[in-house]
Length: 225
Image (cartoon, rainbow, N blue to C red; front, side, top):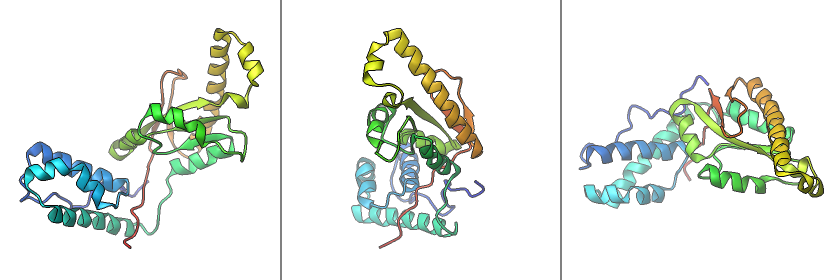
């Protein structure tokens, strides 16, 4: 995308008169903007996250609230300059993946372990879901930093085998069948992603996640009430 969705405006900075250590100032500066990029508009979340740093610096809750509200307002002004809510190529590609029976989720859960466990509950009765891809919230940080992320992936075996068929396989046969299914399905996924001008890097090794380059994730800050 030609628009820079991630950089803070030149007017953004933590107040110079806050008595923060260099490390705390850097942390608060970076993490405040990370929350903004995730469209966090609840000031209480900012106050809770930075409670220790603010207390150490002697910053009152009222002063901190004014600052965080001003940062949220700066983000809203950025958004207004875009002329509407953008839809990234990655979001469009993930929408298309649903049409071929692949559950695709962005910024999904806190980590890969939780994502791999919870993705099964994302299936509905609208179609036969064959597999999934997702990236979690830590992966989203990679998009903010360098427009790159990694996706987890897998297959939903009930789309391919009955329970009776599956239990009849030996452990080695199960591994072989699953690897074949996932590789074939990810080949379809790659085709969809590349059609949306997303660079895909994957060796076919199921122990390695798929890397995506040239991608965006834009969460829109809600308008002021």
